[in-house]
Amino acid sequence: MPLIPRARYTDESRFTLETYNYSKLPNGCIRLLRRVPNSRPAVYTLEEVDTFRLVDDPNWIVSAVKYCVISYVRGSSALTHFIICNDRKLAVPCSVYELLLDISEASVWIDAICINQADSKEKAASVDLMEMIYGKANLLYVWLGPGSYDSPLAMISLKKLASRVLHETDESLEQPYFDPQPAQAIGLETGDARIKRALEHLYCRPWFKRLWTFQEIVMGRNVVVACGREMMGWSSFIVATRALSRLRSTRYLVKLREDGSGNVSILDGILEMEDFIRLYRDKTQVWDGAPNFVTLLEVAQRKDVSDPRDKIYAILNLARPNIRRRILIEYRHEGEAALLRLIIDAGKACIDNDNTLSLLQLVSSTKRNPRLPSWCPDINSTQPRNMSLNPWGMAGIKEWGLQERPCASFQEGKDDLHAPGFRLDKVARVVQTSFVWSNTCLDAEHPSREDAIHNFEWIYECMDFELLENVAQKPIAKKARRSLEEIPLTFILTLIGGILVGNSNTESEIRAAYKRIISIWRSVFLGLRRKPLTLLENATVNRLQAGLMQNCRYRRVFSTQDGYIGVGPPDTMAGDTICILYGSRTPHLLRFGKSKTELLGDVYLTECMCLEDTVTRGVKLPQMRCL
Image 1 (cartoon, helix red, strand yellow):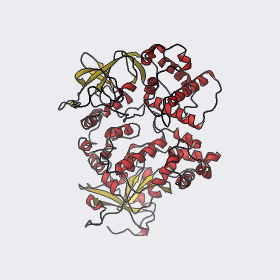
Image 2: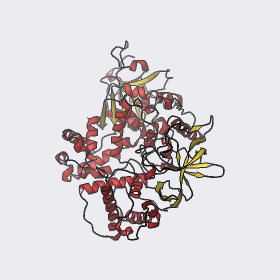
Image 3: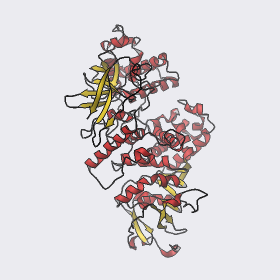
Image 4: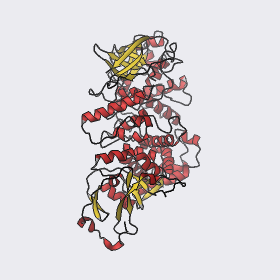
């Protein structure tokens, strides 16, 4: 198409031209939005390009198309603005209009324009091509949104911080708090409230909380972060973010949460993106660069989407091929029945391709949906805790070994899970309250009074000497409720899920951190003054609280008939059966009924988390059917 002369259109032309209508997109093609050089106001053309021309290979006989992609948050889908495209006016959302003002690339791919949003078939086909579209682009712009009054200050501060911490060693950056001199140079350590407020506003932008943007940043290359017209490289952005997460003066940023569950901070979520980027690009991995799909589902649970089906579709391009082949992207069928079918099919694909049954660990991290099988987590429900999908070892009974282990399976056309395993123990007594932390902006050293009172009472209910006598294998004096000296170490490890609380995780470190956090709750409860913690003490206490948040929040502590202490799902009841399903990395809690067996969720018992240290007896069960 010939270029449009510069003076042909005025600003009013966007309202007087005829409306642009999308034509049918041929198979194997995408659209690219090209900006006419020197056009004022900006004039664009939409061109169809064969995907084979996206191949970036110097030996390729056809010259590769050069273009960039833009990762952004669309926000409202209302088409409130117009651009001139192919001699027509094209209605676009406000966010798209604003990003085109900030980013003036000659050739771009933007989903809101380059995909006919009214054609569900084209949308599904384009989602299938996302990996190629983002992977072959020369540049990926992460557009955080239009500039605000303090966004330039935030971006400039991040660029300065990144340039000043590049000399730091990896070891120093891994410490809880490293040398604050780089932060002092940009004003963070001198109490400059303007910078802190600007950084908070920047990191709270919606881009960091969306699931589609998570997939896009993982698949893209040559990434540039843009906020308004301020830009910086992604690698520098990550360096600055990692530094902020370890500076005491910016601990307030670590407390900002990326979802309502309060489990993952925004900064940790950004660093998690970088971990996935490295895994995805490292083709030497045993997964051929594709992350475990259950791990992706765990990320999807706490990210935002506009369409609930996108909790699965938005991560599908990051999955292994055998998972992608099992799930059909289909936007034409709507309604709850289609959504539930999609969730079940995704769950079955996970179990069929993962002998460790890691999907079952998500069951107790979601609100139960009675319209789904008990083994199938509802990934659209809220997630009360951050999962740990890679425990130290494989759960089991060591004298039975792992040889000739049958796998869980489904009958053809059925959704019932057939899972062989063995019964380990039964729940005897359940603590009726749970660990709480209602204000996630407070760290372990400064709990709210309500949380301190509740947790102080909860921990002593858990430490009831009758509950712990079998664990300690000796009588526990009532004074132990005050001294804490006779509390079994396995009890503390069970509460925190075995998480590291110090550099060496010795018994003395664990007990010291445990005493400190109870002392903090007691002092707040009674209104007593206490000595501030040192940096090292603060770090160990916060690590211990991280274990409590992960393992005990919204969950129940219980004792078993054989004298073990465990942590299980929120609806744990006396009489429920602790089982180990063949291949699973954790024990699970099952409720046997007259007509069905219900899977309640995963269980943490310190003695059963590694084959080398696990219990040595159990009762083998026939193949069970979990409904």
